Image 1: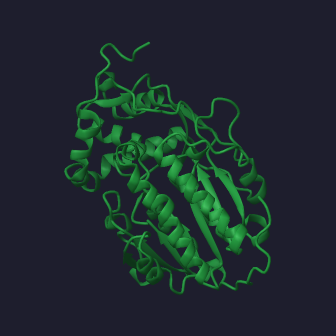
Image 2: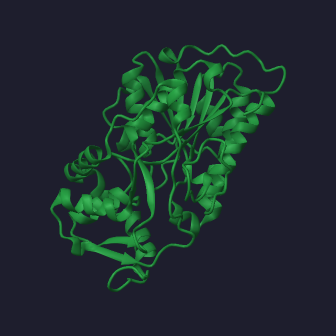
Amino acid sequence: MGEPAAGRRPRAARPVSGARILATGAAGFIGSNWVRLAMARWPEAHFAVLDALTYAGNRANLAGLDEARLTFHHGDIRKPQDVARAMAGCDYVVNFAAESMVDRSIEDPGSFILTDTYGVFVLLEEAKRQETLGRFVQISTDEVYGEILGEPATEEAPLVPRNPYAASKAGGDRLAYAYFATYGLPVVITRCSNNYGPYQYPEKLIPLFVTNALEDRPLPVYGSGKNRRDWIHVEDHCEALCRLLEAPAEAVEGEVFNIGAGREWDVLEITDRILHILDKPKSLVQHVEDRPGHDRRYALDTAKLTSRLGWAPRHAFEAGLAETVRWYEERRDWWEPIKAGEFREYYERMYGSRRVLEGGPAS
């Protein structure tokens, strides 16, 4: 990936097992799952969480964690004063904070650019001032590669983002690398495939379809439903991130790592499995007009991460999906209040006027 700037200052952060770690956006889905895993993995570490608590941020996602080892900062990564307050004294930073829903980025691209690109700049500027910072992990996405119709993308593949969300994440991704190359900031960048698991906001495919099915509501499938993604359980993603924090500098810094499960499923295959698990009828499936620029396939080559750190996913999709469905089935107390609030207005905007494809998808 190239050499860092000459004259890089030595950094002497504490070992991660006893460090102070800032996790931005960790009241959200992936971040909250990571904090749960990391707190159990490193019982001597202290965690700071910076989260703006926008619609997908939820303090309930962090419920039950040891409050003596967790400091919550209500703030915005786009605001330097909030970032400086939260990052003070931290040895490591993992940036989960992002706007992440493609449909919302099509509707309001500006908010994605401000958070996913400018917000990363604010974090990197403060990290540059923290002379003892041990590592900065920027969470990117496989969507930066754009539509992959051939061999799975390696880390060297060109970035061809095709929607505002993917483009804004590519901006943050490349800014992080630029701060490594220019200033010697100890940066690691990850690009992960689609995550699933507990605490995922129900605008995303799996929790939306599970909760709609539990309510006997239609499952709105875009177009043909043949769009394919690699699906990884959030705990496998989080395990990879822990290993990247623990790894020696020479093995990971200035590098990009793809994270994925290597198993692709299309929307209809996932829909069928959800309906089968819940014993719901296929008549709930409703094909609707597709969204603009809907990428047909994402696929990642994760050989670099596996060979470098020995990581491999542990969750088979079939078992992981069943476990996830049961979690939502048992945790109505978590998702029912969400679907009664801002989500209802969003859902009506996204699907209320979308044309239903009578008789299934258009040929």
